[in-house]
Image (cartoon, rainbow, N blue to C red; front, side):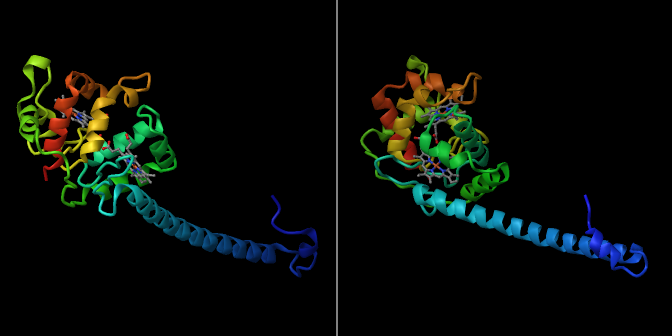
Length: 227
Ligand code: HEC
Ligand code: HEC
């Protein structure tokens, strides 16, 4: 790679050496300052990028991550376990959990953005959305706390915790939207566990399968009101 044109060298009085060094020095100084400017603006852009992503998430998942009740219910992300959020974003990206909307949203996120977004939503704490039919909530509580031994359904609390807050890759269910949960539990194996390798979705599959529709509605109504 040549730094100088031959005509520039001919103009130098000392045969070019000193001038060449000075010019080289200037170029390095310029290069160095440009590198600093670029890396500062790249950092600013990444931060701006994250802020923009967050606003985008909130157009669907609600301003405080509380979820949104529409034709497609948008799940609550507030207070969710960060490991679970990260695991699900990876599942969407790898199409182990098939959802065209969330594939498009997630596949452009960097690993650092995924962690930052998961951490942000984990720290939000709006009240539950509510609005679920209340009629069967006491049956729901019984299923949640004790399971249904006759149908091979374990107590949900054994994994999701007595208050429904989850842990690590086991999600928080407290305050999750009723229609979203009913949809997930009735369509479990149509959407999750689609890859060739077994993933964490397999842990829930038999439980989702062994619950009847009315038992699903009961337990979803119960947890949707937990704080
Ligand atoms: C255009 C609407 C839309 C946008 C924007 C959006 N989501 Fe989603 N998201 C959804 C829908 C719909 C679902 C439920 C998919 C399903 O039915 O399984 C979902 C599901 C999720 C889930 C799984 C939740 C769970 O409880 O399993 C996570 C995590 C998630 N989104 C994170 C994000 C993040 C982070 C962003 C921003 C980068 C984002 N979403 C932006 C619509 C959206
Ligand atoms: C053995 C542990 C275990 C038990 C018992 C269990 N779950 Fe789960 N549950 C999980 C795991 C792990 C996941 C995350 C699955 C994944 O990665 O896709 C999950 C996910 C879920 C989800 C999806 C949440 C979301 O945000 O999309 C719902 C709803 C759910 N469980 C409800 C229940 C109910 C209701 C019961 C009791 C009848 C129950 N679970 C019992 C481990 C368990």
